[in-house]
Amino acid sequence: MKGKVYIVGAGPGDPKLLTLKALEVLKNSDVVLYDRLVNPEILRLLKTGTRTIYVGKTKGEQEEKQEMILNLMEELVCEGYRVVRLKGGDPFVFGRGAEEVFYFLERNIEVEVVPGIPSCIAVPELAGIPLTFRGCSSAFAVVSGRKCKGEVQWSNYVNVDTLVILMGVENRDCIARELIKAGKSPEEPVAFVEKGTWKEERVIFSTLEKVAEGVVKVNPPAVFVIGKVVEIAKILKKSAEVVTC
Ligand code: SAH
Image (tube, rainbow, N blue to C red; front, side):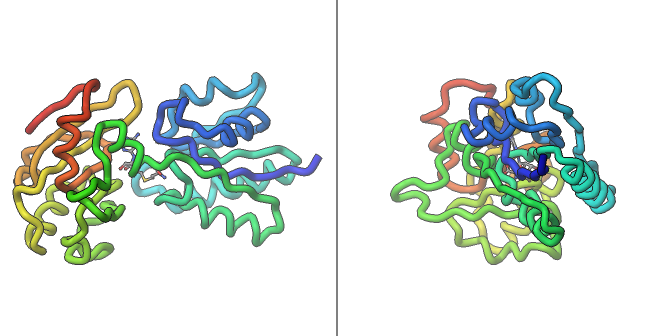
């Protein structure tokens, strides 16, 4: 049988946020290589006998590991297996999914993409934060916070109503300072949603100024939301632990 690669989004965590298509592909797969952000509960949905391989990357080994993962997938698919690369959220949102598609296309290997529910939208949403709201936010931007300086010009985002920063926990103080320096109000409401849709979900409310001062404690992974829409969560939110700093 001819092998095939599937680049699949697992959604933000809760298995019920998988798409029907993702579930179908997972149930028909032979091998699943999964990321650190994939909830292990999703792996329980696989048929017995499916091989699972954890390929979560830690800091400093990203490049080597990515190459190793692609080589391993290539080997498996050439042996005739249906190989799933299962990624947190959506594979094309800071997920290197498109690079992986290129890799297989270049080698004439059949590859299919299955979108996932992205954490940048669903995680704030389920914490009660709409990214747009009539009269309050008519635009949002999703920005990488992996590096505070160099990669991103924070001044470009000062006038965007709602900012959603992924991979920004470590650099949160620096990001907040840069945004204030570029003209964002220090009183701007912010929220961090840690491990959104997982059982351990925690929501932390604060202001940009407090984050800049370094007094807001957050653990990764978290979605960092900046904007007036954060206030709406206080009306919409019913469950989960809510902490105000
Ligand atoms: N492709 C992924 C994002 C990869 S970048 C997606 O679409 O969701 C990884 C970052 O996403 C994390 O550092 C964090 O900022 C965010 N993230 C992903 N899942 C999350 C979750 N369940 N709760 C909070 N943040 C999450």
